[in-house]
Image (spheres, rainbow, N blue to C red):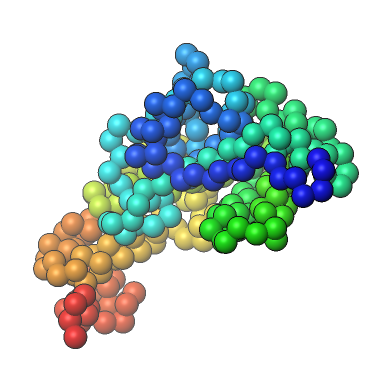
Length: 289
């Protein structure tokens, strides 16, 4: 590629309900990387595939595709339980062949980069690698918002190159070991997603175990290493945070602890004081001077 010539622009999009409706109506898609933040499904031709966190789904340009969100998904975002938080299901990174060519031929030739989109497939990641990838996506998102100049374009090119080189390295690693690690991690995040969507109900450890067809001891053993919390404490923190938000927004204390999933006031009251070091009626209301 001649000096000063830039490849086609790339695009990083958030996948929410509105975006999915537009996406599914489109008859043309570039090469895409689908990065799920919560479970949903994708339809490729006549095949339906369930996707989850800790994965990247490779979607070549000519493949017909359709995103399918859960029919009933009223819970908050997987990483934030605020009631008003926008629900993001995934990111989609799309780019054309010229951008891929530029990555493959820049500095040192790496033709294997171009083979990533030879066919649709799924990459599964270890916890550490996934966290690194998310930070890289955040960095890319920030760069795309900057005023366009040559430094900005080169930074974007560098970040996208890093993502694709990581995928090349992963594709050459041991599939068996990689999947054994990721299955446990995916289960942990699916448990978290289920809890975040269900904590305002009368949710028990046995309910979670039954949902995933595992023992109660396995639930905690899988969950705790990734979130540094027992299931009990994680649910308690979610309920306290939600109750605090409701009280802060003017709902009565009684309605707040009931809506947050607590069974009785005394347990809520003790836990609230221990967590926030104030009594529920001392929560400052939004809009108060």
